[in-house]
Length: 402
Image (cartoon, rainbow, N blue to C red):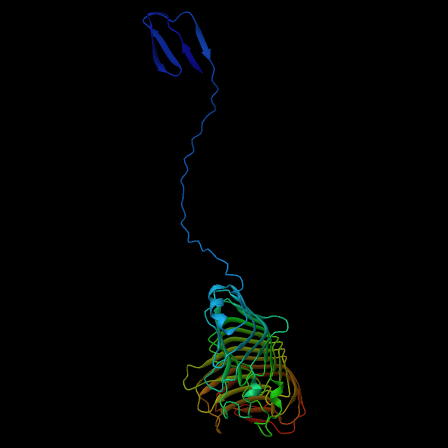
């Protein structure tokens, strides 16, 4: 409440505060007006303001058309600028690799139409390389990656006429994914999974069926040779699921790895599901590898662990489970420690190997070919093995036949 004081003539109004004033020296007279002012209680809030300085990443969309590559020359700019890029119907010039080695983190690469290469007769030429973290590489419906192996095949694989030695080298991490990819007629080795971690391969089809037949360069031999499907080396936490491989060498071979699983896959006409253990020093360790629920057909050695004669290292904790063998021609289950030589040596320790629920048939050969060095095969378990059709007696050296 605010008081309004009107003083008579000769008196002075003395102000004390908004609620109290007086007339001096006389007395207040005449009119006193009481003015009521409604004042809302005022609450003063003191706020401590915290200012957060952050780095803002601004994503600018790539120019229209930049992310669709229909020529080899467009690929470098697309991977530098695009989060999602498409390679469509590209025929790369001779000696020109498709090198996806500067992809953005978590980039997506879509393969559409047909990727192919002009003939490049060089053992050093690698047609394709992919590096990245958290990337996805996937095929569009009907897409294919054509290695034009028929231009090179001479029945001699890595020998003979010059030809690309490895088709695709992959170095990825961070839950990368390769899915729905179709590879046709690879000259020699297929997918080289090298130095990878936390990477999945799903629904990969490698089609080298045409290499089973002779051609004008191979005489009476199958035209294709040394056409490994997956070479997995120096890698960890790798999953290969639902792969189909028609080829003329190892379907999947694993070496110097920790944590590889191959599941629900089909291997035709190859050397099967392999572990390649050891090397020139004891630092070579392959461990925690599982092959589960796979079918092998017309393989020479559908289930195989091999170590070099004179090699060193360790092969630990290996599982083959739920493998179906159809028409193997050398042996159903193979362990050899004389690869590349004649005498089995014990420099590579093979320990903790389990074979479980293995069934099927042989066309020729023996059920077991177990050729170990002295004391170097330990902790082997065989459970529910049902392989029929053997035409030879088992070979078991330094490891008892089951």
